[in-house]
Length: 182
Length: 182
DNA sequence: TTTTGCGTTCGAGCGCGCTCGAAGTCCTAG
DNA sequence: CTAGGACTTCGAGCGCGCTCGAACGCAAAA
Image (cartoon, rainbow over all chains, first blue to last red; front, side, top):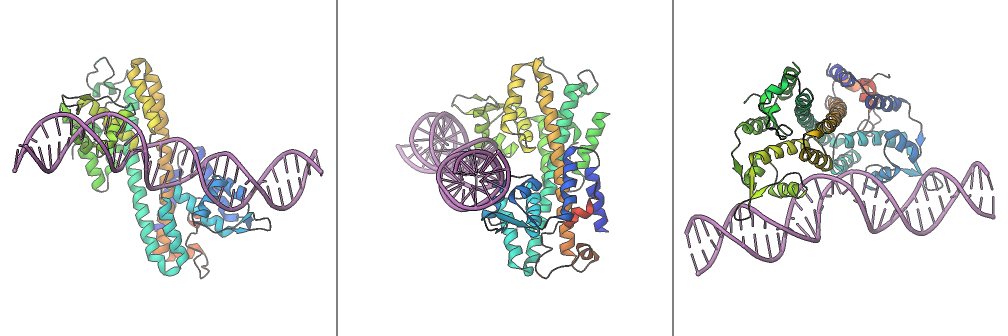
């Protein structure tokens, strides 16, 4: 049930639009059939990050990667899955530090599950806060665009008198109006 | 009408919750009655940034601030409004560079309005993309929390076999399931 | 055989957005 | 008269997350 909720939300998130989401879908769909092993270039390509970054993550202790006869990295499916996770977390704004902490918990064994949950829950809340902030900003920017663009429209009235020079340019009335006091 | 939409969305954004939004409301409400002039400490307080940062923004050419007899900064209402805008933009992730560009357009006069609109529209799209990304990440994290936490629940079945060691710890099946291949 | 290309390690460097410290000025309270 | 505190300028430093370059190794293609 909770699961259904999540699925629904995920689908909603993709609802309208664009190339970015399509890529995302592909990435995720491909997770189903990962090759046994991959080269650094392949993984970099899959995750859309540079080989440099992959080496950096390894140096940072986020993942261990075996070498072949030539000393080249060989990423097995588990390493790739971990990197998918790490990349997603980075993208969602989790700092390297926290990721290192989390990974150290994972590597420490199953008894750290509760602590891992704490980390995840905290991060979840951080993401939620961020989304709220961005939604607010988005509203402000959209309002500004609307009042700028529709100079002929009725919205302009809402801004009050214009002083000839660019007083409306940075005006922040939008949210003052959009958000009733309290 | 478009305006009503925006108001609605803004209110929705505040719907559930917390202290952060409450602060936001206060900040915005206060915009209505700004004092004629303010000191750096007052502005810093209002915007919840440090005096250091305010000086930095000035050095960066984002705002001009007059001095009093003692060489102390005196922020007039317009400067404060601009700083409110700037702070909001920074919070929403607009880089200093873009802000500098935007401000240079504002200072260049009214004929740059179309170009300013371009900047705003682009930033709006950036924010939207970011929100989508975060929403996706949020779903993933929530799913992981759900499957971790409800170890006794039915959700665990969805994860497939556990291999004793921590294979599920970083498993990314959530989105593979949540997002049908397409 | 030489070149091309993909990989390796190591350490340094960079871009961003602050953040801080030093040294000085000025006003006010005790 | 002195001490405290809030301010000034200036330049340096920092934390983050990469990003890059140098010098090298190996292997398949020309």
